[in-house]
Length: 166
Image (cartoon, rainbow, N blue to C red; front, side, top):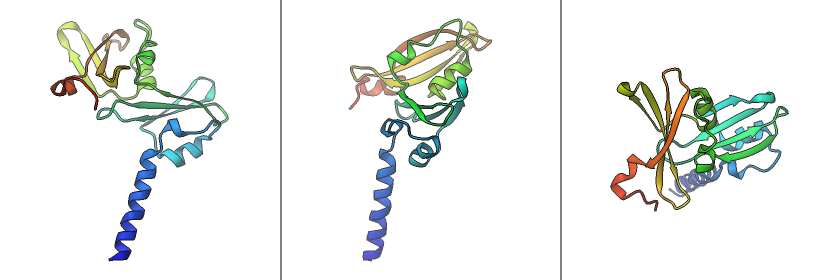
């Protein structure tokens, strides 16, 4: 019985330690291999200009975070950024950015919508605003997959609780 309790405690400790590992916890100049060993497999990996690599760790749709860890051509950590923010969304360029650009920056959306009468589609990303309100960023695309516009609104998944984070 004591051995079983010890085993369960050890497993719980490992799970807790792994759960605490986020790209934000990486130290400068961490290698790509060290990051993968510490954080596990990313939800996506993207090639960057100049030979770098982006490891993307998304918790969409059930959480409001997407972390990008960018590594230079030598495989060293160059920057880490939380993408679910007003500042990151402000960089989306209507008339220029494509679905693949948005995917590379923000990962898979929490939800997608098709508006046949408007001849457009939208991707929704869930995030928390500076005031702690549960918001959603909607990125609209034309039929060619180019961004038409962006709109921020209340996260429709949280309307029952008034949009406040706990």
